[in-house]
Length: 414
Length: 65
Ligand code: HEM
Ligand code: SF4
Image (tube, rainbow over all chains, first blue to last red; front, side, top):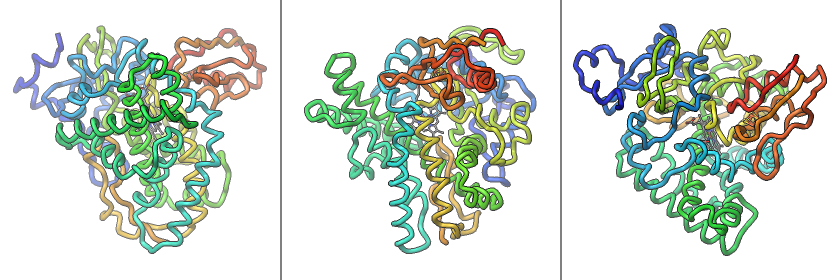
């Protein structure tokens, strides 16, 4: 049934079917791979070859991706044959814990709604002073400490980590452990066993926390899930722990990489950085956040889906059982949607970008991420106006091997 | 203009609230969309149209102009 199983390994195909993900070209470090841009210019979905030899469709145009991600005939279920797994670990991990990110409706919606309340625009806005306090404190520490500093370690990672710990009710003192395991989960080249072990560690840890919160609840998301879902029998402890793990991991590497990579992008666009720093206009800060989300599209390995029925897209037929990879980084640079798409322009209206995905799986934490990034971009460069790279750009280690793009380190000084 | 919001489809993304806060709200208990008005004044129409396009769940429908 799965179309690519029969095609796998056919020598005639190997020559023509490009490997995915594609390497980024030398030049602007933020630009998507040039082959990806060529494929978008050609237009319709085309087959690519993944690490396991499978050949799913790659969809590159904005309009096609938007339509497909909102189409109920496409599934996010990582257990279906034909699902285009990003890593060997991704296929394996599903056995240990399943969360709503890899489920279809109605199961997906049932679980997602259990944890949507703390992420509404209003609830997130109420947290802004807490986030501002966290950001101020970390900047105070950097200003009082030695220079240069690694901005990733001292600032970009702690911000989202402290915020999500506060929301979930996870002790921040444990961050060394779950940051290390989170990172293993998003590395492309991590061995299967290491990813399975990291996942098992995290779920076990959260299961113990959920159990503790059943007895001694606090004012936090895990306590609420424990009281409203676990205690009532709607959710097992294990499933509650898996959900906690999803929330803990999903907001970590993503927001951290947006902080560090966004800062690097601004340092390389000093005019826009100066305007942002000097204006203090919340509308400009907000549009800068949207534009950097679009321009950087850090979740750069594509949304992954599998077709449940035959679907026509751009003159091609994606057959039931075919894997589909939606390259949102290409969509966000599609000139049919965004004028002059390769230019970073803080004043453009970038809403409608696909950096948070689209369809029912669109990022649950998007308004939290927006608010954190607004606080960070609105504060860091004002508090440290002389901020600059402490090494040459070509010494900055980019995360080409990770599912989430960013930098491993960002040595800065002032 | 008439606005319809499908609470079954809504995934609580908040895109509508960010875009047209005078028209859309989210329920406190589960983040699902609610309408503050289904007949917004002309000054809100553009924002409402934008919210309908940005809604990831296709949960916002508009009738009339
Ligand atoms: C700038 C930071 C972030 C980016 C770029 C980002 C990106 C994404 C993307 C692209 C998806 C869609 C996955 C798919 O369609 O397969 C997603 C889903 C998700 N994100 Fe985020 N995210 C960010 C921050 C956060 C934060 C702070 C949280 C909070 C806990 C979070 C929680 C989630 C969850 C739970 C899902 C799954 C939603 C579902 O399947 O219904 N994310 N995110
Ligand atoms: S934009 Fe759509 S999915 Fe998001 S809260 Fe509004 S109605 Fe619900």
